[in-house]
Length: 179
Image (cartoon, rainbow, N blue to C red; front, side, top):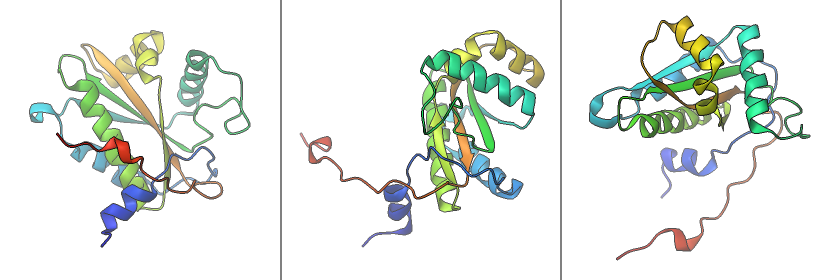
């Protein structure tokens, strides 16, 4: 028998076309809270989730991300590596923690599942590591009042899907093994 959790995990897909409609802040906050509830190594809570609202900063992050990606525009995303999602979340983690990247990855996973449960679409956007290693990262950390070494783990593009989600795929049988 399939549980609600099983259904959510089975049907969640990365979405690469977003409507311009902004989800309610309550929904966004529920997604963020799920990320903050994700387990962390030794309960150190090494991650910080940042909602990027300022249009200028969003544009700067988008431009830097596109440059790092080094790919020409595509029909799915145009020039925007965030697929025009109305919400941009950034997950960073304290580099002094040996589980920083794992903690941030789990936070992103929890947020994607919560978004799907709420009827929102999401897509993990990579290259936050490179963004945070440069001048943009310094600027963001300064604005947040953070000191120390912080690793960019990833972004979450969040909003409502434009069109249908891709179908669930069959699990390859060779991915589960027993010794």
